[in-house]
Image (cartoon, rainbow, N blue to C red; front, side, top):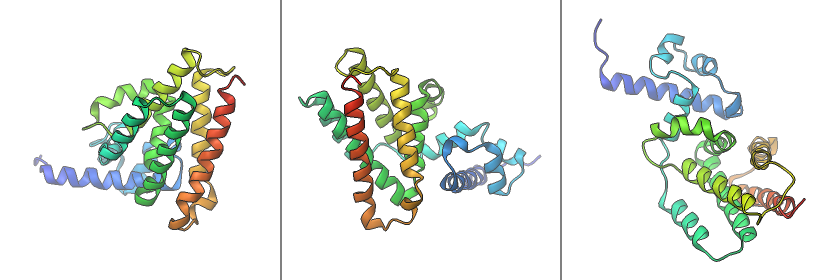
Length: 215
């Protein structure tokens, strides 16, 4: 059997990743299955599985297209080194996430943020794949620092709630997923997207602040 040239393999991988991104633009990432990608790519099942063993490997390939930007890192570093009270840091962190959502939707749709939500809900799953990431990504950085910050504040008693910490993260995920997939968002002009998402982030921040104040 003739050996497949590296450039041919990379081209096929890119075609599969592009097919996956098209699927993810039509449905939430947590509903995407390998069979969806096989159908979208037009390749045989064996052809797709030759390059990607499972859905997480496809998601890793998508994430590897986005590496950590200095702007994101610097803003998060400054935020967590600041002397702001935890409630203020929470609000500021959500603002950074909101801006990341806007950039993601404008550039590649909602895929990157949805992956943040997906792996924030399941840190163990993220642990199994993060070693495959070529570099630290915006996903990894935001996922790590928001989850760590929230859990630390809950465990040290600064934030108080009757909910389990996993449920708080899930609440945020559900809200964000609903926001990203809201029908009105698709038709929102680019120049109004920032304003619309900022308003929704503000609602989430207010709700979390009340929830974490002992509710």
